[in-house]
Length: 518
Ligand code: TNX
Image (cartoon, rainbow, N blue to C red; front, side):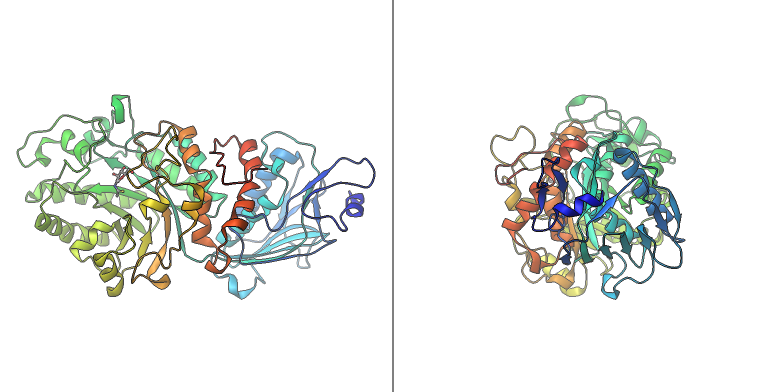
């Protein structure tokens, strides 16, 4: 493999061909990473080749990330890639170290150094090492994503990267209520979003059409309320063990699950399951159409708060992450004063379970405590109530529907999705600034960004992938990379380099004509 270096001098990124008729060697460019890192300094003559002799060195605390990286690389390289304790002196090979990182990297960032003899990722926390490993993945040839052994060679371009996120919260949301997705489908989406340094998965677990999480104190929610989905086809629900399994899998990818129980509207599945939750004590029929705004819990009944308290307690107990999302959107069948009464009773229940409440931005009408996180989903660039909440001290999560909604069609001929917030091509998804999108809500008042994926029109993981790719990476970059790096023409080039990876991974993506696919 040392002969490789003969061909490197003077060659640009991409295909490096030898002077003789040697086979072309694919080397990724240090510039082709999504989200773009904070600081990238390529170095010539410093490429590293992963070989059958390469070992992965870890310290206590980094063996989880080491095992993950080894498993990933073994699939396509076929190399043994043993995971060993890092020696005191730096070793040749790949090292994942929790010492010596550039201090600017913080808790989620990392430093990556590639020389001819070693790849060294340093971070303060395992989450930072995991982020660095995602960068390393993208610096290897696309064939590294194959699940079967490929010929290689496996060259990483030489250089130095220092990288850390713009926002601490970078989320993907998945609606498992309108259409139900299996545990394996959710895990696959977790793997796909983790590649772009997304660190929260918001699961929309309940809605009018289905209740998708087993609640032991109210079992009919899942067994009856979860039986169907949009269109009347069989739905389903996660048992508590299955939900724990999803949470643990996400955690292994350094992703925190945010469960959403949508209240007090979007509750027909619950109202159909228990007659006593209705003001008239009569359970309505289950519904599998896509209307919104017709259902409401009965605000004046005590049993409503017993119900909500039980659900929040059980979901909180299953969820190690800090957030519990209570929905709060489109409660058009709940009179405004009732809505405020309801939230004033329910927000403290979340706090009592040790969780931070999140809610769609409609919750600002109830003047929630400043710990609560309103998620902005509007299409306007100003919102008086959200601005007032930000001024009071609430951090705002940015999910503007006309920019970040992955269920919007790309254009008028997109087979899937909706268009109530407009068409969202890749450039539209990318061209906005979460730290200055809303009047009076500045960068420091924003907790981050999230890309919602509602599933009225999406039936399976292929549909999810087609809507999420390539827009999810665009939103992920807005959440991670500094605004100073924001540049559409550079982004579309970097995005193009992801195409071959998705093809190898079997990700069904939209081949937007805005992107010069490779
Ligand atoms: C609005 S956005 C909704 C959802 C729908 C979505 C479809 C929000 C908080 N509520 O109930 O699924 O539009 O795009």
